[in-house]
Length: 287
Image 1: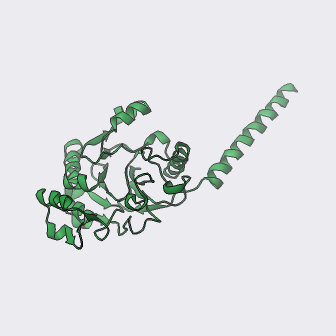
Image 2: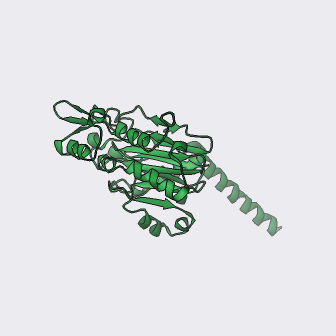
Image 3: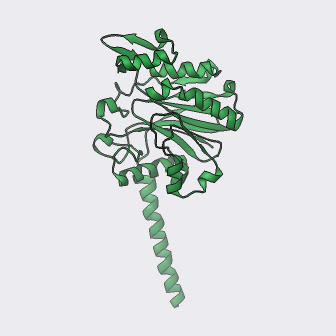
């Protein structure tokens, strides 16, 4: 008799728990609004927008970058919502701490077995991240800079690249492709590329020193720049040209039509909102 009583009690608690969290996750948890990219049947690729998240103020509403000053609880909840959509646990959502250089990190089984803190240390100061592990979402954080995703359907390998103007002028896309060739045996002609939302030619006004840096680096200035009151640089075109020069097929390159500066209500823009604001997450994952 007592056994039945205790069994009923525990069944009640179990059912209450399941119902509580089912309601939370399936009815109340916000679903991030994402720009989804079609790179292949075995891969998920996307860029986040500002909509449907838990951050407030200049971080509103969907931000998962831990390095820009946002509230920790809001970041965790936004990550939870994205992981739920991806069908992964939080430790399988990876983003390096970028510093506008050209260093890369490879995500392999050994790195995945590290503690969270050790993993963050390995990803410190990296502006490109790559893996061939399934079920691990890798990505980069931007707010006017250019995110670039690479997918190798033959070798089943992926890469996410943060290309600000410094990374672009130092040819981080070219270096990332070289690294994929070295590590995974990728052939550029097999790669599928997505250039995500970033600042456009019309909005990216620069000083003479930036123009000179691109010119000295050997870029075709007629193709990538325009003079108005000041110089304007076309970062999406700069990175697209690097892809082509490395041997990526033109038909394999997709370019987002959105300018983060102009469409700052949909995407984060550091030039519009200041550096203490949210960031776009552009991610890619092998299924």
